[in-house]
Length: 466
Image (cartoon, rainbow, N blue to C red; front, side, top):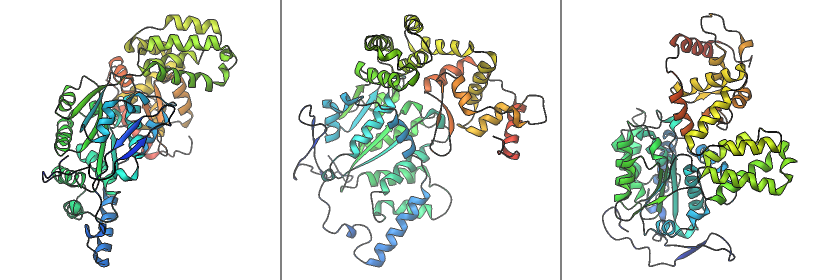
């Protein structure tokens, strides 16, 4: 391991901390090589021992933290909620992951096809690293790239998110962030990209910490920004900062970056146990199916058939179980199990056929909702979509009696659409693959007049009638 000045930093001259992920019945021991011991007086690093100077550094740190942007915690919590039981523990127990945690490997890229659960894997890794013992002096920062936010997740904003988390590990502003502070004091928004890169590299190579960076879904980064983002990751790897990332295999530039020495590319695919746990949880929480699923042999049959047809892809299992949960007899369930196709596109097509087979009022609602979502510039908040759907083409009068509800939209879309967010709820496609599939289905020529009128309604009409 090397410091930023190329001098050797040893992690071997102090006691090795052992981190046990499970008990002795099924234990996986990960030996964490701790970071160098902190100086006896850490305050001497940032502001010296002068109380006035130290207080000034604390205020400077608070100012920088306030100015840096980024919503990272909500994305992590949403991903964690999708993890069922002990899913994906196989990755944490793998030798390559252990080597990466220990610093024997610097870069780790989890590569998997659409819908296999890469985001859940990333969230599991973040949570796992946060549980490392204090003796490891580990700090974990992360960002979840999302296709719904591709326009707003610029390289500058991504670095801002990472820096905000890093600076939370300090009690006063470190020297490495002084340039960042000076730029922010100019009050011209976020500093230029190169200023953020310099600050990130300098703070990440602080020898008093072992820094882990987790970046989910590199392939979902806006095409215009991918080159800059990969250049930053390349610089981090060059500085021996430990980076974990996920991507589809089709993003060849990302795959190539992690082919370097001391990096590993690891295949991600849901195991049968992962999918079985997911399906079991879905079946057991559906109250109306409890009597049908009381027959354990029948429940096992349902799980095994979907397991087989999903072939390691969570999204296929999710689409199929969503249909099963809507059925009312064993015979209808058996008929559906026999008709389920293989492959992601075929299952997406099957679900779209079900949406279009609904009564016209429901199918029209679903298709128009998804059209707005496909061609919107950013994720649509609940009221934005409701008002857009309630706008009549050719009419210059808005009637609140034409508004639908978010629950009716979700029900009519058969699992293609979900609501995300803790406070400000937004509509989102269940998965990037769903978004991509629906883009191919719709004619992009949505009336500009219609769009303009809907936005006018949002701006000027009271929302009390919802």
